[in-house]
Image (cartoon, rainbow, N blue to C red):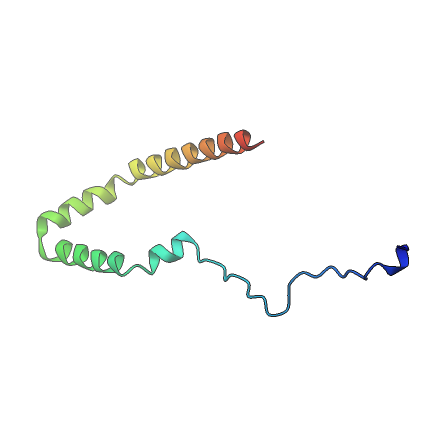
Length: 91
């Protein structure tokens, strides 16, 4: 069999009629579209408005913003460290 009898091959990115999977929305978008989240936020806002004790508790939580910033920074640092260790294991 001579090399001239080989069929011509064509490299294609997709097959005709092939359906590509749709991209999945991110976790944050899915979380923000959650009906349970919005019902919970409305219930919490109603409690804060109607019950003075909850209003005082919310004010104290807001006044302690520096604690929340510290916790957020620690959480971000821990995730970065965990992701770096996972990336190093994959190599």
